[in-house]
Length: 614
Image 1 (cartoon, rainbow, N blue to C red):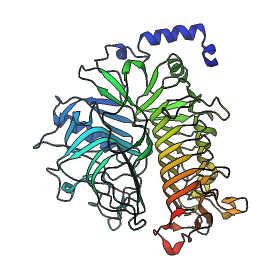
Image 2 (cartoon, rainbow, N blue to C red; image 1 turned 30 degrees about the vertical axis):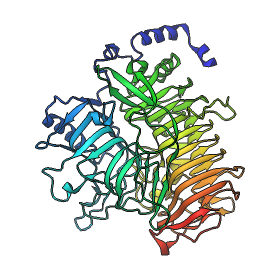
Image 3 (tube, one colour; image 1 turned 60 degrees about the vertical axis):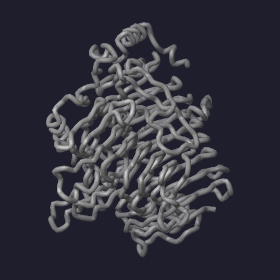
């Protein structure tokens, strides 16, 4: 706690002033907690008394701006106060674009009801009418939570009326959502082809009859489902009431855990019965199944949070944290030239509207101390143009080692990017050194495409390999770390390295990098390439449930990778339902440790499975 001593008298005076004003730096936010807080220009709060046409127009205009804005800087959150929106005759039907969050402000998902639809459709990426290339493979970065959708397709065409469509891929979260009155489809089958999708994540939700369709992989956690249509490569269910049986894996390709070993639901904003703004912080639980809309946890008044907006200085944010405030990051992009330091136990850092922290001058944008109970949720962390050692660090190597199995530090819907919107460089994206950490849905992505200015084709991929440098995606050094929904892609050495004891992963999805120019660039000593998932050689106990490593060496299809998974050969390290997949370029010679056939060009799109290893 020596950092306290660095607070100067002037800074302390500023801190006391901030504390008196609710630590928001905004006069509007210092008003009564029953008043609507000042959450910035990128947050819209809807009230059920507003005309449906007004709400519809606002949402439609934002979608029109964001539907193709994959690498843009705009961020939005739309918050619905308790009540009902839309009617049988005038339903509220809208689509959700990039960097958009749709969230209800009720204490229960049933407190906000949308009579209509909340949807995501395929994007058709080609202007060629003969081959429009309509897919959901790049439908990233959007959120829906804490509401009920009473599905009403009135006025839509016949195909669109058949379901509420949620055709998404990575970095998309659905939490605390109920559907009534119709089915849910995770595939958009109403457009031209090929209609591919690569998601995805649902937690703590009540689902109707659900069409998986073309979704390559998916994790559904602690939910209820009326039925699930099919599997493609790797559909995983953990603590889901109504989940399909997995006893005949890989036909079909289901992995089902009766209970989730460790879980904690994401914190959420709500307005209570007196009109006061609060944040519910659910407690961690073990060995659970089904939904927990009213589960254990604590409630914090929003006045306990520093409400940050883009342009706020890190010094100001850190001072508020040092004075005991939690942190609410409103939508936008924050340039971070020195670390946001979270060192008090039980601190909550909650982003809304896909708030994004971008490293400047090689900084570590977010640094969490080796203390229990910290929660980081709803935050994206981007690498900058100067290499960072790491983008988010939880605990330091050889730190104090203070942790709590019953109160794990938790990362929920935390996403990482190296490249994409701009050139990015980092050694490691996510480093976890603390024990007893829960990672509940992350996408750690070194960009395989973007708007950095590289040319298309082989030369552009070679430029990306040399310029957008990210060596390791996730490095887990702490013991007793659990990951539910670990998606890591395209890093230049090991995508995931797990050195801690007694680690558990429930669904792992990885694509190896597309862009190594030559085999010499993709060598691990004398071994061809790096496995997509590496468990450290000294580890004695580890469990993985439902893991896939995919290869698409489009820059040089002759490149080989020896193994998809690399783990110690010991009885306590167990991999259950794992696979490699060839996406039409390159080859993975074995699934794990020399076991399993090659995922080569004779098996494009056909997984090579190992049911259990060893």
